[in-house]
Length: 476
Ligand code: ARG
Image 1 (cartoon, rainbow, N blue to C red):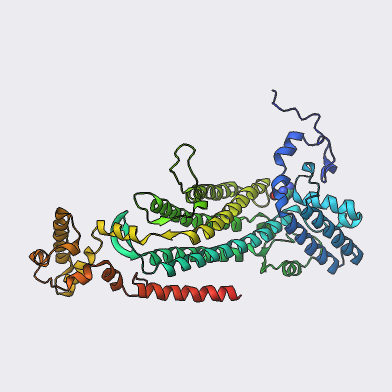
Image 2 (image 1 turned 45 degrees about the horizontal axis):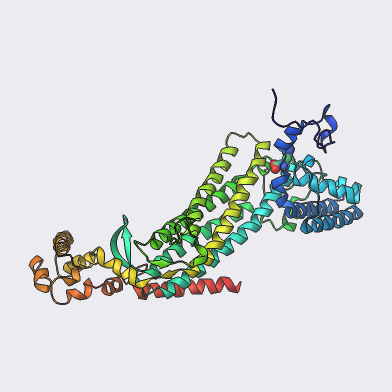
């Protein structure tokens, strides 16, 4: 059998590995490439260093390494951190992953103290610690971007409080709502997302360090101490579970999927609203792109891209669930496959939120077009039914009467409010001159004046409530 690539002269071939003591031949070069993770896990380097420093401090505290060793380790790690930040650190594929790369460099820099660092630890608890530390920081960034997006949407709601637009069900004009009310619906959605990320964070923020390979270690380690140094809220209580738990990463992908689903729904609305048929909004030019052939085009590329990217985030979630399923306790190399989906989700969610914060701030609602669209679908029909009910007509009868009235208006190609009083009265004697107040869009919207309703007075209250929440968050 021949493969396209021949690795026999590869310089990686036959290099000594950290764990090669019991092996009679070097690992196959292709296998090395196939199983290595350094290309992607090096992004956890700073978390890896942070975890190692806590572990080293603990080893010194319990008397396993000397004060001098700890000092050397700190000095070496400071240099490594600098090399990584400057981009001069030499990552080596034959050292497999971020952990062994950093450890090898540490030993090259400080000698034996570097070799003592891994006492009472395994890459299994090390990697679990690293992902948690890394993810915790990224969750904080994501939460603050969600908060920023909420702020932008609340500002849009405030500005759009009196702009009337058709509310839809089944994509059919249903009842008038305000643009502000519509914006606040997304603020609520993103609030649930924010809660979900904060909830996931609690389970991310537990320390697996000290579980070692799977069973714990024979050294008298102090797991609470390392947990505290690393800012973990709790210590994972079972070593087997500690090294093999990736639930937190799955939950992160799940929370991200729901967030992206919300973004995708918003994107769909933006795309629709931008189409010539609707023309409900204008998007700033910098969020649209032209066509290579049709000079007149302005395409809503950012919302469309975001809508599409929801798919890859769902894919990451499914990849995570699938890779964990069927893995026995405790650590399995399969788990290394958790990094790329999680990183991809982090990048996608962060970029998407960033684009949306900026883009949503630039959305310009077109009140004239929204109003015009309201005219088409008899959006105040329910108001007429409610009016009849207030005059003693049972709701089902009122529903029927209004149905006939709508048919009449459709035949005459006019709105309900344009029907003469005598025509309206031919459907019900209960109808009086005051009916025109409820048939008007403003009247309809204003009448939905209760908690959660679309009345401008209610939306204003909600805006004030959100502004209070935002001010409190920003004060922290
Ligand atoms: N790169 C590995 C991972 O991401 C680190 C742990 C490796 N442990 C092992 N026993 N091979 O999962």
